[in-house]
Image 1 (cartoon, rainbow, N blue to C red):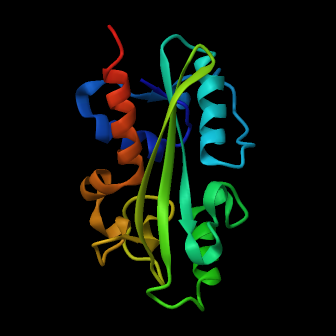
Image 2: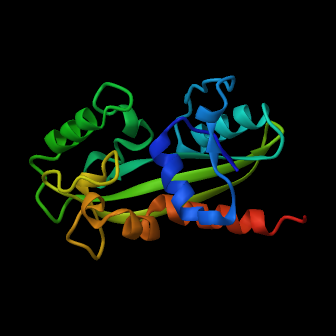
Length: 194
């Protein structure tokens, strides 16, 4: 399976989730793949852009993922701009610092949020299906833990007092937005005729 991403953290999570069901590679394994500008305003638009562009370059199915954090007190922000929320694409420290600053006056108990993941499967440059997974939780007042990536140190899923970064990959990969979307995608692929 080819994942339409150059984000090695996402690839590693997906690889861990699918186990030995299939070989997982990403755009880093194919230097000639184009860089896809994520110009969409929704997760599904951005995931579709990536899946269609990369699937036009290879045979077989391509899976893409667009995901982020939606905070109710911030009217859904950072949302599709999660990876650049702090002003620099992919700078997790800046993103987390801005989120903490923007929520500094929001009391615990009013910090509801969710991680959202939309995955798109495409082939021959055409999107075929999309799947949405989400996990509800709270944004913590300060970072906790060193595992995961992105907003994981600030997000405690419902039913837990610990952040995703503290819970570790095994628990996160069972609960996460990405695992929920991926389960649907794998079920869809499993139903395809041989």
